[in-house]
Image 1: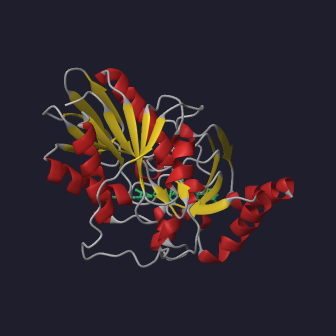
Image 2: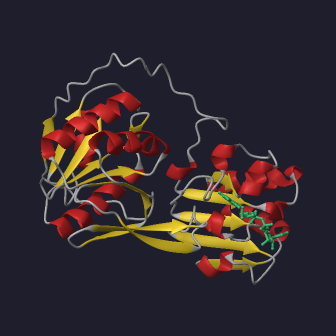
Length: 317
Ligand code: FAD
C-alpha cells in the first residue's frame, strides 16, 4: 500500500464541475497528512483538455481514461478499480454528487474499503477520521473510519477550489474497460427547468415564501433580468410548483457557491443554509429583523420585498 491519495474528477456536458477543483484541495490536504502524492483520475470526455485544467498547484500526477463522453456507472467503477489496483493509494476521494454517490459505493464494495460519505472535513493521524454533518447540519459527528485504506466522498463547496498552475505528470491509463456490461448511455436529459444548473451560477437571486404567491414571480423575474442573475428558491416555492426542482437550494436541493446570493423573503432555515452558506457574498431582504438569514448575511435589508425589489430593479437598470 502507498500513502498516496487518488481523487476522481467529475465532468458533465464537456465541462469539469467545480467539485473537481475542490477535490484537488481536499486531496492535497490529505496527501500532506499521509505523506503521499496526489493522483487525479479523469474518466471519459475530452480527457486531454480536462487534464490541462486539472493540472493545478499540489497535483502530482493525472491519469486519463479515455472511454465514453458522459458519466457511465460501469465505466467509472472499472476505471477507479483498475487505477486503485495500479496505485494502491491509501485514500480514494470522490465527489458526494449524484454521480459520485452512484459509483462510490460500488467501488468501495469491490475493493473492500470502508466508505465515509459526505465528508465536510477530515484528519489523518495514523488513521482517518471524517467529519460529517447530521440532522440538517445541526449536529457534527466525527467518524473514526477504521482500517488502513479508505474511500471517501466529499461534500461540494466545503473546500476551496485549487488554483495555480501545476506540473503534474499526465499519462493515459489503460483501464482495460469492458464496455459489454449491459448498460449504455444513450443521451442526456435535464429534469425540468431546461439547461439551468444553479450550482454553476455566479449571481443568484433566490426567493422564499415571502413572495406570497405565484403571481408575484414576474416582479422577481424583472430583477433577475436586470441583474443578469440566475433564479433559485427555497423548498416551499418548489413544493408549491412555482419553480422546478432543479432551482431548489438546500439540503434536499442543490449546493450553490455563487459570488453573490441575494435571498429575498427567505427565513434562513438550516436546511436552506446548508445549500448556500458557501456563497462569497450573501445579501438578505426580509421584513423580520430576527430572521436567521441575517446571521449569515454579509449585507441585510430589513424591509418589505415589494418595496425593496422595485428599487433594486431601478438601481440595477
Ligand atoms: P419561511 O420559513 O416561511 O420564511 C419566509 C420568510 O419571508 C420569513 O423570514 C418572513 O419574515 C419573510 N417575509 C415574509 N413576507 C415578506 C416580505 N413581504 N418581504 C420580505 N420578507 C418577507 N428548505 C430549503 O429551502 N431547501 C431544502 O433543500 C430543504 N430541505 C429540507 C429537508 C428536510 C428533511 C426538511 C425537514 C426541511 C427542508 N427544508 C428545505 C425546509 C426548511 O426547513 C424551511 O421550511 C424552508 O427553507 C423555509 O423556506 P422559506 O424561508 O422560503 O419560508
